[in-house]
Length: 113
Length: 121
Image (tube, rainbow over the protein chains, first blue to last red):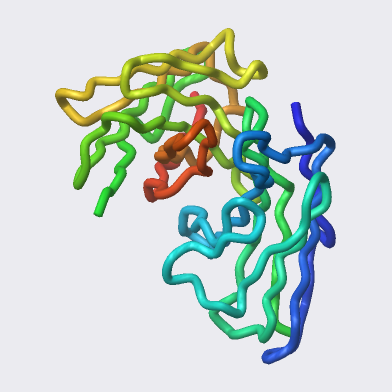
């Protein structure tokens, strides 16, 4: 299975400051048919299902604030929140969806400093 | 807007079979793939497997010997069976939808609210 490793495990950032979460895949997840990386970022608030924020490593889903951005290619990816808001407190997961079985990172817990 | 809702027993005895159903509303099931994903309390997400609207399935090798998925498009439902459960199978179980376009498949979206299944005698 493809192992997805996130760093850090937890992160405390002041309101209005930048938050950066990293995700590393144990194998390349670049899709040959569209030359895009099969990497998604999810946000999970307590008691809620995961919400898809970003697909294809950098494509923001409809309705997701533009302070969320994704980058990276190959095996190394980053989720950036440019200006942290109180409602961004959550656990964030990366997922690779190129190889079966699909796999998730261990999660990064984001809190307010 | 498509919505997914999991249902099934919240308590299952060890060694018995866990059975869950996901009901889909707001859209047809055709031309989509349907996943089951679980999450033990305080832990990350584990992809259990998927089934297509035509019934083709693919399971996580870690659970393959115990998992069966089925789909009933006439009822707009798909199901999960997990046999010989133990306490390690205690988790919130989610169902979710995804599709493939032009040979490239998308991540799961949307997800159901999830249902907690506890394995205990």
